[in-house]
Length: 347
Image 1 (cartoon, one colour):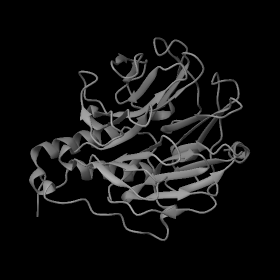
Image 2 (cartoon, rainbow, N blue to C red; image 1 turned 135 degrees about the horizontal axis):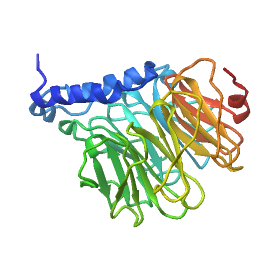
Image 3 (cartoon, rainbow, N blue to C red; image 1 turned 60 degrees about the vertical axis):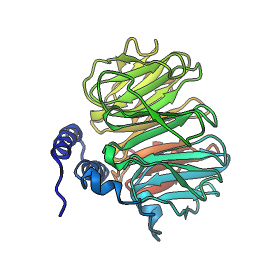
């Protein structure tokens, strides 16, 4: 049996320390932690280099398996999750079709430029690309020897994109994902969790250990900012102008109205990890998290009301389907809902 290298053991210990600081532990948290440990304590590099990625297995209940991210584009919905699962719905989430995918690595982020062109990222340093709306996928990056999963992916157009992940992983492409190059955006190697761009062009990255990054030049350079909280941030939601929300561990939620220079903490009423957020067309803000946490704001993020979902199952991402419905994904799989349904839940 292969044994972990000294480097792998050290990374396992670090991962356990980093991810067990969560005050709310659910199946979602444990599966994510187990997946990261598997990356850190896998086979030695020499063995991994000789093994081709295995394709995902078709699962009758894939729509109920752990899902980690989703996107809505031109009437279609795409969700990604554990074991390389990719699901596509063309009827607003009523039915889902699992697609054949050339990897079993957990997929953690997905982004679509238009109804045909999209990318997904995940563990084993995998980056996938589709040119037919998610029906078929090809691997354009695979680096299990790096022991650094990707967490998010974003493209400014059909050619220029960024993938971010563990240990400061920051990859760029200028040819639609055919080739990728990596670089450091800071002296630290903190995990980079979520990337977003505001309407005015500023870009933000929510990161580990109280770190937050901003770019004013389309990602060419990044400034490190430090809000007044040393825990990890998992989501960032740009608002109007230079206003932005930043959120993460232990229910911590911060607002800045000057692009991250100064911050005000907003009461959430929860200590659950906050994972994702969206702004609806009418200006309503919705932030979700573990333990069935749903926070709703109708005053442009000045305050939030907690609506704890009865099943307490972790929510990893929420998407505006833009037909009056919402899509949530998490440890329950995929679920179509409405704002009214979410807001009706009370603890």
